Amino acid sequence: MTITPGVTGYGVKPRAFVDPPAKSHTQDELRAQRRKFVYRPLRYGADFDLAAEVRAIVGPVADKLTDEPCPASSGYVEAAEAIVDAVAQLCDTAIEMVNEAKVARVGYTDRKRARAALRTLHAVAPPEITRAALIVGSWQTGVIDMAAPLTGPLADLLGRATPSASDTLVESLRALDRAAAALDHRIDRAAFYRAQNPTATTTTANDSEAARRTLADLGIQMEDNS
Image (cartoon, rainbow, N blue to C red; front, side, top):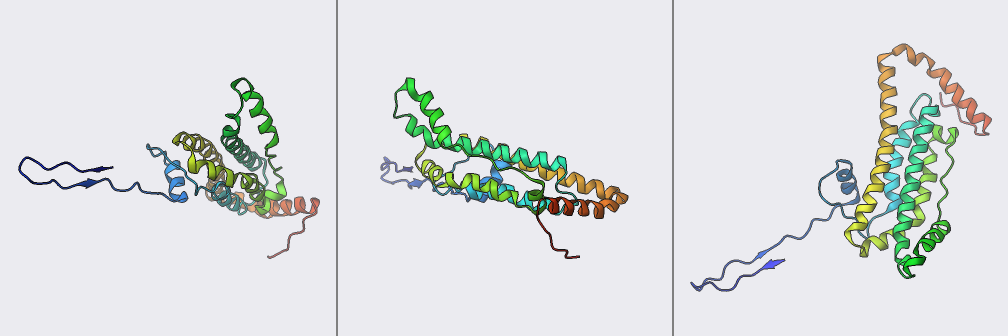
């Protein structure tokens, strides 16, 4: 907004003040702000890439897990499944956001039926988390693939939607942030325990051999790089 006062009684025209343009943030910057719970609205636009966002959240922790002595333990399986559930919920939210414009075209009394039908039509099936996928880190691919088909429609919506659309998206993204952070913290706690208890590392070879047997049972042969 530009403020341009008229000429004063002394014949001197004050300086005009122009508000600086709003700063645009990259997707990486918005993610950092979201995780810090910055107390100002976060706004996503037509350049938001849902699949890239899921990759940026899930990819690093999935890769980090592969360095663990036994990445397919039950605790890690549960943590990974929680991430899959969070991505599925994020996709459901995106689907509802994209479909809302279609729902608005029908009568008010029929909107509930329309939402249910559209949700069924565009349902995203979450991938199964296997122990083999955890060991090699490939489970992240299936998670990213869940979000890929929604990237374009969601970006189009955010490019013309009201700020409330970003608020809805932020809440679902934060749920995924928490799920990924929970797995990351679990890995860190395990590493800290091993550092404080060196004798526990003697089981590493046995754990690795158990992992290889699991892969062999599943028909996956790993090269021995030792």
